[in-house]
View (cartoon, rainbow, N blue to C red):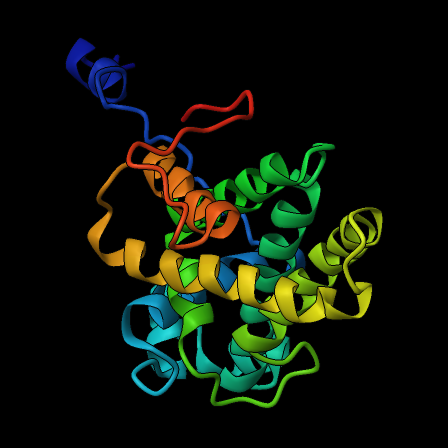
Length: 226
């Protein structure tokens, strides 16, 4: 009986074994939603609402257009969620920063909070300062500034009362102070000079002393220096 040659026996031994094909893990609904929000946020910041398409969002996510519609009902729904998140984040950062007892330090904390947001969440701020083309329950950047001013208004009202000023004027002063910081933040977003602590110091200098009493070299009185 013929025996198999050694070459025939060993012919399969030296063949490289094929690695098992790895199956790509499918994203959960929550993960996909977060991915679409991140992509939408980046595109809206770079190109604005009108310059961003559902096709581009879907392509960057590696999905079909119906997936975007399934999660958000369209570009408008995605944009509204992105804006709502950014507004909530900024409001939380500002109101959470107001912890000091002295009014001047409170001004510093508010200025730093807004500048921190601009520095850390630049894309979000780009989106917020644009005019919103979509009707939203949370409104626009102007209404957000109003929400922040309301937080400051309560603090100013108590301070006005203790100093003998009419507390009914607190809302006007709060809007003026918050608006000044917000508009300066928009300017600083583009130039990024001087450094953040100097911008905060100059903002407080104007708010605290007025034009007549401006310090030549404004200083920060709070513990934060950067």
